[in-house]
Length: 185
Image (cartoon, rainbow, N blue to C red; front, side, top):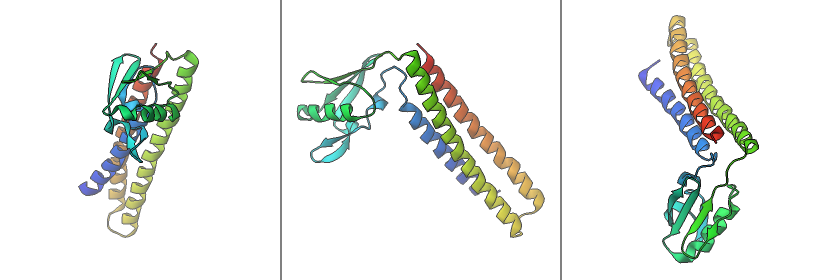
């Protein structure tokens, strides 16, 4: 397989891993993380705008996020965006800032989050398998068209599988790390 083909496959696999990492960020661990809210879209002067573009977001302590809008006029809109999100948080508006307090996770909720995470892990593995299938189809087509020999086909298959194994291992490591975070009290 040409280096260009391998680079394209690696880029596709890296995209799948990056998407998986973004999905994992959205799974709460009981700790305050600005990444959970910075992309929430809110109504700002008639258009949908990410929260990070209209306010500063900081962590006050392990379980509290403070959102300080650049314009006090947007406090109500920020509060509404957080309330309507799927974060299940109650924003506290004190007239200057909005505080988001993350409650302690119960054991039951931790187990639910692990199930969600496992589902996201399987989705990432499916994306990796899809890339592998497409690449393998391309290798078989090259052999069928007489561009490569049967021996080259199997060498390329082994090379491809090595790359796939590398990315599956990355996904597994990310999943294990996140599970450990979620289950940590």
